[in-house]
Image (tube, rainbow, N blue to C red; front, side, top):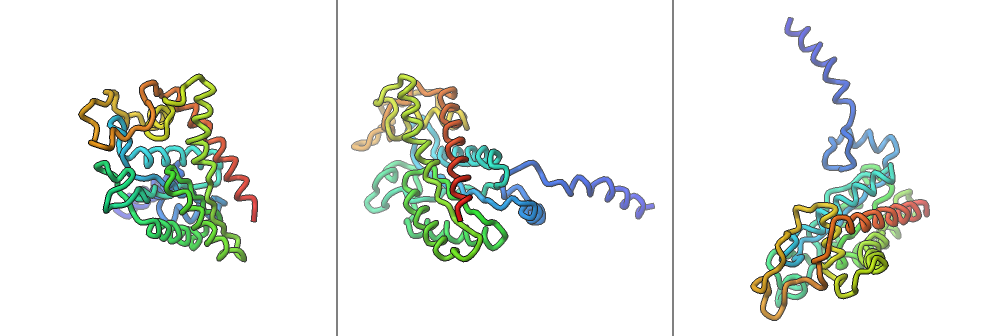
Length: 266
């Protein structure tokens, strides 16, 4: 009787287990599910690169990590043959002694650029070992752009006689920064609102992608650090999720096109 019951359970459960979940996130798959997905032609892996840094008194420290993960998912689904690796949250953010850049604000985490590059390189080698042909670096942070370009260049020189390639897609960051600012200017927003950090564009994107990371209460005078300020460069007060969605569409469309162009070159 027990054997019969177990056989029935196996019949009922096995088909469900044979279907991998509807996800593009590598860390949500088992190794056997991943192997099957690669064998069916999903051979592009997106490596989302975030950063943990101050984003003013109104926006959480993990903005870059949450944003790049959400955008990478949209990009992978639009490509149709890509998965998304775990977010790299530790990136160069400035010096420790004395503290420079965002390191002057509590919560920011920095690593040396050479350590960051070694992480990217080792991750890319891991993905190639397991059957991925195209390793795509998407950096949501300005400090990572040069490093990811350098790593892709080194790997491609090494891999030139193989089918594998690394791609540093700078168009992602350009679309999220200069491209989105130009779009907002065309909608009538002022240059002093757009700024360079934690201002209207940054805040709007976060409201569109992960709104719980944004605090509605405006900054107070006592949120300033002596000699440093609030960490905001610009003015986020007119930010909105509707504006953010314009940026999301821009970033996804331009990045998908850039990845397709880069991965067709060998």
